[in-house]
Image (cartoon, rainbow, N blue to C red):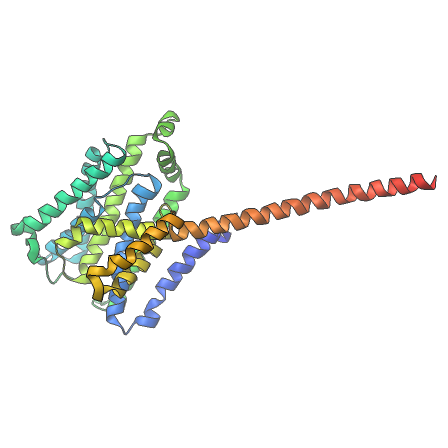
Length: 349
């Protein structure tokens, strides 16, 4: 099937186009634009989680910590050290990549539930450093007045619409990167590891190296999302690096669909708006959302996109089966006619 005729790709493009057109409806509503932009920042980090969890099958519970490193890197460098946003953003992403790679060297020595526990410990250590190292991170006072990106006198990124399209452009890069990885030999390698590490090792896959790259890529996506989040919100506190943030990302990917291209985006936007809808009942929102998530995991364990993809696959199989039966019928029809003609001629004799 041609990629452009693939229903999954068509659906992903449709979601992206719909999201890209939202400023036409909400350009005058700054608060709504900010909520959408924050949701896209989260989606970028969730795409990183999708690489390590959805493709490789490793439950990384340190993603919130890497998100916080990116956010605090941009926040502290632009406020305390008066760096430009772009310089601070690049430095933060590189720093997150290095820290993620080093953490991966240790974490990937473990497997399965031990890997999840170890990465959760890493995330908690990052949170403790951010929340307690007051002389550097300002601890619970947080970081105020994070700089907006410099537009060179051409673009004013203080405008919510301009900020939306900056984050949207980065998000498009993340979506395409996920798509390219999934279709590449690297993606097939990661999916093989997810299926069976022993099988992957037996056929010559460099399992440790591949998992290390996936972990580092996941951390980079988290740092990118965090850096953009800091400038969108303008204020960051320790909550941006908490374990709760990691579980929010995990919820987004479960709702959207692990291992899919559109799942992280769809799940992030849907749950972000549900959180916003229940913000007046913040203490009780999980009482409502919890059963919804549980029902989704039970009846659609592959998430919304995975469920719709399975429905499309089932429909395509039925269509191909019907076409095969028609083809067999058409092939057998001439032979039946010839047999009938032969019988008639024998009767005449």
